[in-house]
Image (cartoon, rainbow, N blue to C red; front, side, top):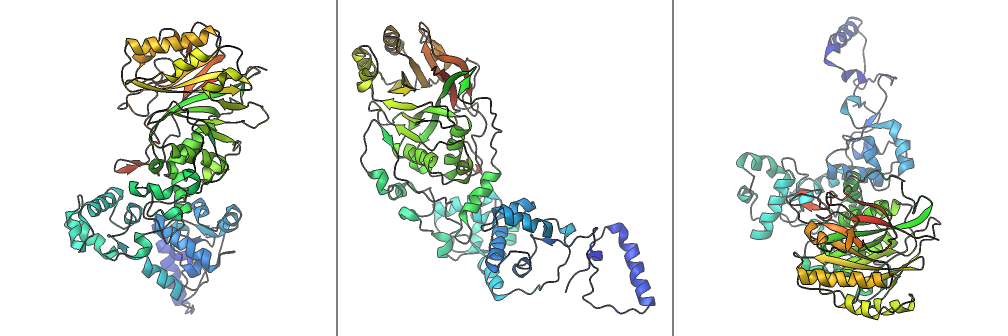
Length: 557
């Protein structure tokens, strides 16, 4: 039975409504129980997508039963649509269909008016509501549990933590043992919970044999495809075979489109406004950006989190970084995954970035130790700027420079101690050689460490070969101790996300020779967090507690 638009009025208008009813009785006019006032400009005929049934949604233009079912499922997953534009995140609704539906729908119940459609639930919609009514405490993820009325994200995380430590719940009353749940809250949430271990909730088998997301380190072996396990050259690696990783969340939403969940998290994860102040040249001189990023314990388990991949790739692309020195890489296969995401994007925000040349490569120098220091670089930046970058093994450096580099190469290969680690890679930027020494300091440098680094810098200056020390120096004192070098970032530049993290990233170049660096440098501080990245018991953490830094080097014609 339809509702009259006159039934949705402000409190002050009740008097006139009652008067209308009294006058109708006096006139003895008979109205049908399904009487509807015709739509008007004041009360447009809009459907509330937060309350509409599957059958009501099917009356909208272009909405089939399958699409109506997807809308209902997405709504149950997120709670409610906050705005009409959120409907675009539903699988099957694109920009064109959203514009077709926009004049017909609303999300505010005050604007809702009845439509001439059946309110009777079909067997399919009844089955769907029964399937999604109860949430299993023994198999549901944090994301699923926090959608239960009465549970927030913290309580949902406490339930999962208790279940992981103590085993499955034998009774719903055992939830009283979970931190933060009292008898009042328990009585409110019990009607929405069950003990059933449903396969669709507890286990979602993914390609490559991976199960239930990224949290089980024991499954990492099955996550790596055969392409990743193929032996490759230790000095230079590039991707030709795409490696597909599913965009999935822990324990899956088997009944919901996972890509839509990630799109929703991405939509509410801040990305900075990109300024077009750098287009691979300064004052008419061609140049490119060299960068450094301590990504903090980069593992496969970390990098398959789609939030981490999105932050890393978008940060590289938005800031037009051409060569990135990466520190604290635990598993080199994680670098392969980042490189593949740049070349064959699977994440929507990375795929949407139009200025991506998709010609990215990575290299892991031979001198790297058990926790290697790596490089990611763009072979050419596109945009018709012709800035080409190639990596050259240090033992092949004599082939591209007109001088004897044997002594320098030997010094570079032996450049490490208990307090710092280095890896060296030579690059040809538009045919001009430069040696980048990727540095990761773990402690305060002593006099012997400073002497050895100084000798390397002086040896490069003697043969007029451009060299730069780039990476994580831990403290400003370590930067100052290298007296024959100049830092391209000043002491006040903060290179960590929070004050509790100790770190000082920088780029050092010899102070006794003419440098090709143009003096422009900076620290990237925005766009480093994502709602899909955990932050303790909350969400929205950073991809790394360290900020990436960059500097520009001239590449004259």
